[in-house]
Length: 473
Image (cartoon, rainbow, N blue to C red; front, side, top):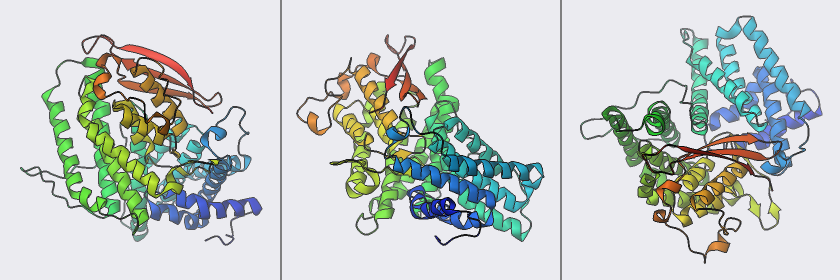
């Protein structure tokens, strides 16, 4: 796979291609979608725009790793644009635009090429820190994936089969974008949920690991659609009694989540980190994401943040599982060492950063959220989730809810073992933050944190505060 391909021109192209095969593919496929990521070197030799986009990703990824950590990559006075990546990114874009102008959009091999390039373009923009352009590419890929098509010929059927590898990738990106944006519901058409019989038993049986991941992602998409289009309006805007139909939707989604857990929990927890470390990582990741989304679903209609206190055991288990991942696969998850910073990895998909950030914001048990913050600071970037930024915001949220800057905030978890930790009941409702919005200024390494509280209780209005936080070293 690392032999010279005919389309590579020059040493830098060959070096970038080899880096992509040896380093980028393992990192991009660290969680799911391995068949797709591993097929890209071959696809790049069939489709020139894919090859150009691949080289752009490889160059940006290598630069990201060579700079050592996300803070260095985004530091004030950071190096100028990666000229090699810019050239090949532009080359791929121009070729795609040219082909679409010729009317080749409907040809099956062109359709596939556009989708593959769209995924690579998303990664290019995320690595460059432009989430808006990444979202535009995602929306374009979703629109193309949703277009009706004729699959009557053998060639078109073949392309349809290949697209099956792409749909889960794009669906996970769609879910990630919806989690990250507080207003954007998933854009892909929601897959139908399995029917439930009178006993609440879904007529599905789980499943191989990839299928378990796909089913969970579909459930999360339904939860996010409900939260973004219905629950948020009820909680943050209209208020009052919850309509029966909203409660019914929440209960139905909860039944599907529980069915997934009943079918998947035992098989996933039985995978040994010693026998099959890669499957263990992915299985544990599914359990972590389930716990985070379960708390989101169960509390999304409640007006009071204290409702999350009922799920302390869920947050505790989430943090325990993350700690298990870091302990058993330190080289994949933990960043800091006794000698300083090691090279960071990059995953295009959400892994543990969001669940840890969510725990820091929503779990008010001092020890659990402090442990979550400690682990969050050690993470690598996962798509749009940048641990330096989200750890700083989480820390400030904890300080606000504690009534001011805590003297423990700058200490590591080990340094605070002898200090008293607040319990959930110590954090009063009127102090609690209900939602957080972020606006990042990367050149200055600051983030504007906008947060909502109800200082006069559930019947009072919203108090909105904004702060600029520095997240650099």
